[in-house]
Each structure stands twice: as structure tokens, then as C-alpha cells.
Image 1: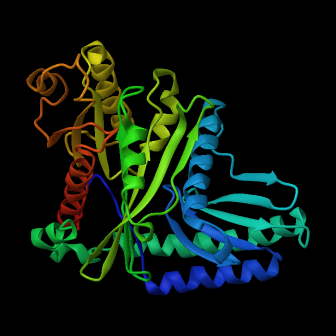
Image 2: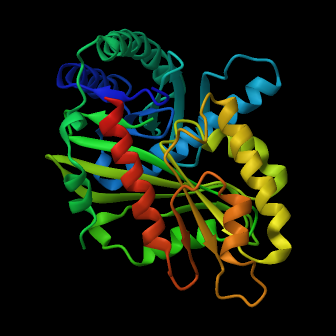
Length: 160
Length: 195
């Protein structure tokens, strides 16, 4: 199959959500979210009602992709960490296991040092979770729910 | 690369609008954005220059409804069409599930169309994809202009493999949703097969 699917199951989702929830508290962050490298939002925590996480996810992935492109030109493997400092909000972006992106948005109630420290620990945990998730997805018999959809199901989606 | 989320009961797919500079990729997205219910769409993001040329990409998230209890979401991206933005185009193709090639029907853009299709093929191949295996549709845009090539000519040049193709005037919306629906269908059909 040319297009391997990214799949998220309940068990791993709960583990990831727990890490993200804890990171919000431990890092004194406003928002923490995880995006895959294609810009799909995987999990989010904190004050997420007031921000457009879908747009942020896509832009973060674009940012990481562009930085990765620059790294390649400089014969670097990746630039795994990025930090953007604003007047009120700051963004810390960390590539985890070259697979997903961990984004922490924080203000003056936290500090870059604290965020970096907590992100490091959370990254290790996330890396383990995603590794086991990947194994699970590659196991034979991990059926897609779409195996049983019919052409009619697809057509129905487009009946306006 | 589609993303199936059992927890949120969602399936996410990525569609990319490709084509030469000024062929109307962004205009396609703008029309879709204008004509979609607010609850079915997110914010449209355009990373463009001051003269409204796409610099990196446009992005529009769309929900199409449910299939078997799973929400289907499509993320629509455009690439920057101008030749010198090739590095950015490659990045946007990462993880793509379906491609729409928007051709500029004007006779003087023939070469630009051909160059862009070739560039699409090359850039996909670099990522390990083959245009012949990917859900792929072609749109012949700007059919309302006086100096356009005939449909037969365009087909012969741009669509030798006979994928689904559509005539369009993206500015007024002609053919825009037909094109989108066709590629979305192909992507979902591929998901069905690919499991």
C-alpha cells in the first residue's frame, strides 16, 4: 500500500492525553498540543477553546516541514526544537521521534527553561507510546473500519 | 496519509491542489470556502505574498459528513505554483491522499501546464508516490476565457491516463465542487481498498 495510514486507538489516545494534560500543569503552559507531521491534530489540552487548534496544527506542520527542508540543505538531520518568542505568548515546538510534533504555548507565568525541561521528559514518554502504536498498526489483522464501506456509503456523502 | 482516529471517530485525509502559477488553485479553495456552511469548515489560511501570490500554501479544513459513524474530514492544501517555489511544493505533497491538477486552459499556458504535471510526477516520485496509483483528478480551468485550447487538446496533453477530468471556471464556481467530490470519492474508495 502506497499510503500507510496513521491510526489512533482509544488506549494510546488516553495515554497521550494523560501526558499532554500533565505537561500543561507541569510546565505552567496555556496550551499543549500534538500534531502529526502532516498537520493532523492528535491531542490537545489547556485553554483550547480560545484558539484555532486546526489552523495551528496545519501551520506547525508546515513550519516543521520548512525547517526540515532547511536542515536537509545544511546536511543536518533535523532541527528538532524551535522557539518563537512573542510579547505575550511564546511557542515551543519539539519534534518527537521524527514522527509527531509537540507544541507548548506559554506566557510569562512560565519560562523557557521550565518548558524545555518538562518537554524533554514528556517527549520520551510520547516516543514510547507512539512506538507501540506503530507496532500495533503494523500487526496483521488490524482492520480498517473502511473495509466494509460500500460505494453507496460514499455516494451518500455527496448527496446534497 | 490518512489518519483514522478511533477515539474521536474521525477520518482525516489530505488533498493537494497542484498546477502552474496563476492557474486558479487558490481561487478553487476560496470558492469552496465561500460556499460551504460555517459548521462544515474551519478557517482558511493563506500564506501569500503582498501581491496575493501563494508563498507557501493555502489551507482549508472541510467536514463532509459521516460514513459508518466516522466523521470524514478533508484538509485541502494548495501549493505555490511559481516555478522557483519547488522546495515548498515538495513539502506540501508529504502525506498526500489525493491530488487535483488544475490546468490553465489558455493556449499560451500550454507549456506551463506540461511543466507543472511533469514536476508533480517528479516530486511525488521523490516521496515514493506514483501519480498513476494515487487518487488523482484533472481540472481544466478558465474555460470562460476566449483564448483557450480545446478540451480534446488539453486531454491529450495533460490527461493521457484518462483520470476523471472537469471543465471549470473557478472564479464563478463552475466545476469546482464536481472536481472536489470526484477526488474525495477516489480517496475514500482507496481507503476501502487499502485496509
